[in-house]
Image 1 (cartoon, rainbow, N blue to C red):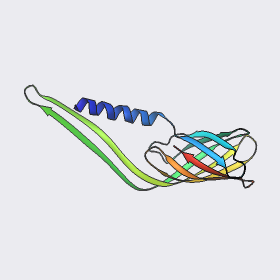
Image 2 (tube, rainbow, N blue to C red):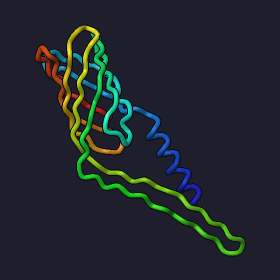
Image 3 (tube, rainbow, N blue to C red):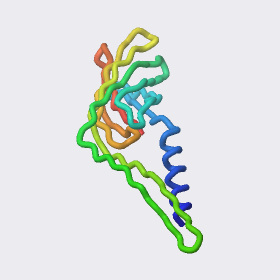
Image 4 (tube, rainbow, N blue to C red):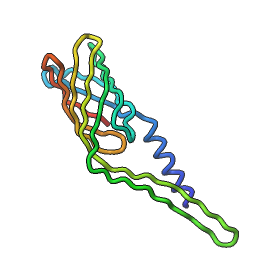
Length: 142
């Protein structure tokens, strides 16, 4: 039982670390949508962000300020009688929330600034992005 629990925790951790959060935007004015990703989201305070629309690609850097985090490390041990069997596993729990911004530029010459609230070890966020010409986009990251 213990080995199965450790195996499931390991698979979950590796899966969570291996995927970048998907980024979606939609213009409030035109309905134009775009998608991309945020890299280095797991347990980091900054990384790269890319959003592609039908007409242009925005790339740049995001930075987050983490608030009130609850972090913990648990050690689990198991022992058996007769011949000695002992195992130890580590589980990292990290629940948090914060505020982030992204400053992006496009291959079409525009720039975009995003502000978002997020939660989780791997960023899940909602927010708003605005281009230099005033186009406002809703932002979702998951």
